[in-house]
Amino acid sequence: MMSFSAVLEDEPEDDDLFETEFRQYKRTYYMTKMGVEVVSDDFLADQAECYVQAIQWILHYYYHGVQSWSWYYPYHYAPYLSDIRNISELKIKFELGKPFMPFEQLLAVLPAASKDLLPKCYQHLMISQDSPIIEYYPLDFKTDLNGKQQEWEAVVLIPFIDEKRLLQAMESCNKCLKEEEKRRNTHSACLMYWYDKDAEFQYLSPWPEKFPAVERCHTRYKTIPLDAWLVEITHNKITKINKSALYFCGFPTLKHIKHKFYLRKSGVQVFQQSSHGENMMLEITADENSKEQMVENVASLVLGKRVFVNWPHLEEARVVAVSDGETKLYLEEPHGTQKLYMGNAVPPTKVAYIGDKEQSIWIKEVQGISEQYQRRKGIIIHETSIVVYAQLLTVMDSFDLMLFDCLSEEAVYRSRQDDESQSISVPTAAKLLIDYEV
Image (tube, rainbow, N blue to C red):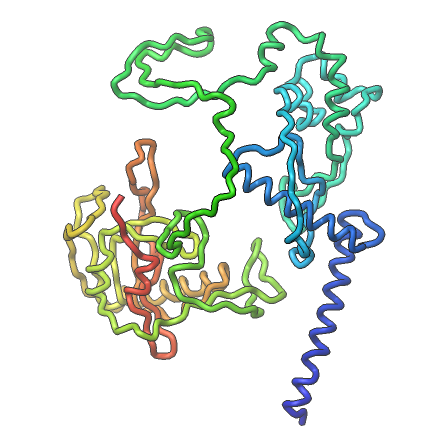
């Protein structure tokens, strides 16, 4: 019999073996994917710097506008996260440069098969063997699925275009542009359009042979200058707020519901195949301070209200029914009603007692939900004792919240779960199923 101490002594050896195999796996990745012969410290440092620079460019883009028009990520593949290290002293700087003109942009991104989208004076640059940039438009090129299944998801292994060479090759062709093409090949201000119910006029078609005039146009617009998107970068610290109180629809967050996480081989399905390795699992944990909740109490809290469902991705929904498998409370409304009951408004509620057949369906439904969450999402929700039925909400052009047409009620979240004879009360679950005024 192997002693417990012997098992403990073996664990460091297993860890060392894993680290050795992982380093070799990464080395093979860099050599085969990026074509390097030696995975040196300098190579990994360059990978880390380029990746951090890419993240910084993206963050600047969304918060401060474009910081560099010419910068691009110079690799087809990303480094391993474990190799993004020693980055605290990096000095990330960008040169603003200037954006491509429209035809320059097209020539930089289009394949040779799309040459007719460009003026004729540029087309030979994409197809002629005498073109100084012909290597950027190969007819045959390699692709790498890189773990994907569809061809359109593959990495296209063509060389990154050199901006200076591109502009130099186009320079001699620019004089051949027609006047109309020169007018098209310019930068101009942005136009912002909006609906105005008080505006009504006839808008004549610029191409009446193909498109009729708009007889009753309710649209207005204004011009936005090109520099409107540049936001000054300041180094002031952002005011801290209580992020736990925020809910961003569709944005994944692990806040709001108590859980624990761990690695385990659970065969979670990714791209229609069960994974063979370990999966990162999320396990919903019970609230030790919770108290037993009746289905009536749950219904009074959420029925007819706006809630967030499908954690951790957070989608808005209106609760239309609540059931514990024996009793079902649902909204008694005229057909087609799409109403949210805000504040102290009491929704019209009807109580139904479920028969044996419906109870059997409810049990199968709960089992299906639990299996779906664990098999497809890697989320363990344990035993469910109350099911909340809801309709997803969507935002229409008028910015009013409207409801999707639902052929049937969909169970989108379980409001109470039992774990080792404990239960999670609705106040805890309400951190996800929370209603608020618009």
